[in-house]
Image (tube, rainbow, N blue to C red; front, side, top):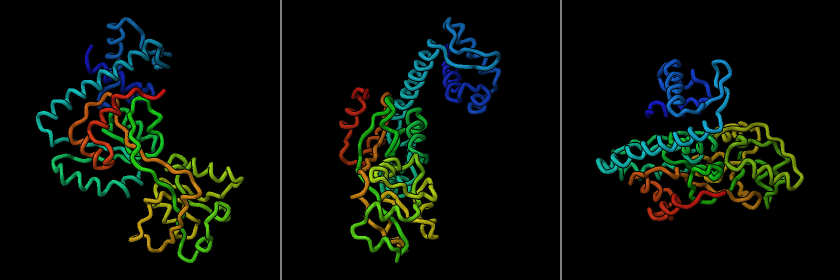
Length: 310
């Protein structure tokens, strides 16, 4: 048994049991992966996969346990490398952050600037995606940490830290009839076409539930993955925009009237997630403290050590 076999095994599972895609992802050959997996099965004395001809159909019950164990083993090997890196060059390395567009565009810039000034030798890598992608990248180790509002707390392998609460605003072009609504109501908003986030993003489900609770079925004419796109179509007059409050920048968004909607929708919480088994470099703790000053090293360690929720 060797590490290459474990990597091949996990890659095949992560690529939907498609050996060709796993080989492409690992820059190797399909026959090579198949041979290594067969050798691993022979050594273990169990079938990891159920096969349908030459195709892998599904994991066997012992195979699922083998894959989970392989993941833990690979994670610990990665931890060994991080330990060595920490003590060899504690202020050098990479910090990979998975997050959504809203966080990357509106929340993280001052944090990353301060971090880069403190750790100029650390290379910052941003992966942008929807909350589920952020959670999966963090859980798999592709990212060192994840920042999002949804999905992170659903993964048992992640320890999540609640960082800050936020709500929504409604953006309309200057002179729009909604500017005269005081107080703003869901009924008034629902009379207009709406441009807002895709279902996977930024509390969209909570916003839908708020309308439904009032018996309203607003017309959503366009959904987008980020607030800048939403603003573009609001500016074109396609509808009123519902966005996260931090996505409104009064210095830049001068063409919009920003209407507070915090009394209409439930509050959302942005979380930072870390893998429970991961060894954290010193500068990861520093980043967490910059993003959420309420968490020092001891608080982060306590969260990592806590039992995952049921």
